[in-house]
Amino acid sequence: MKQQEVGTIVGSSVHLTGTIKDSSDITIFGSIEGEILSDQRVIIEESAHVKGPINANEVVISGQVAGTISAKSRLELNPTGTIKGNVDTSELLIHAGAVFIGECSMPDKRAEGEKGEEFFETEEEGLKEKSTEAKKEQETEPSDLIFGRKDEEKDEDSDEERESEEIKAKEEESEKRKK
Image (cartoon, rainbow, N blue to C red; front, side):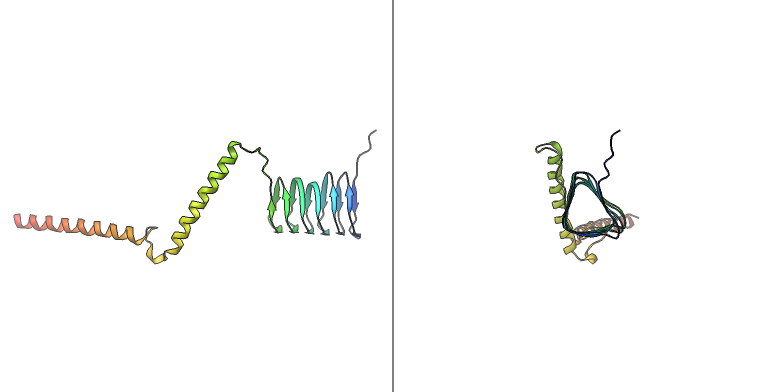
């Protein structure tokens, strides 16, 4: 009979200072001030408070964490969870209600030179062009716009309308004279 790996469990009344390292799962219910290292999964339960870096294959947070997190494959932040610090992960899942204050770095899983990379460069260029257009529109006062057109276009349309009205008026006058 093969013995099941239990891993490390830090109870809710426990306060640890230092480094916790385990090759299997680590589950925290209490408070830790220091580094947490696991080859598998680190689970920060709702009652837990961690101050320090976390490094594991997968990290699931329902409690409070102040520190950097490196989750090689996946990081999940549950609705009751809070992260104050930067994260580095391949996959990030943040549930509604969760709090994340920091920056996230997600390495590109694709090899360099793949088709997808070109798409992102093109997409990025397109976003730059759109933001430039948006800035130009912001520089124009809202009163200067009619249905999204600027004054220049409005003036051109007005000139054309005036010319059209003048032509119609002349035609009507000439018809009256004929009668």
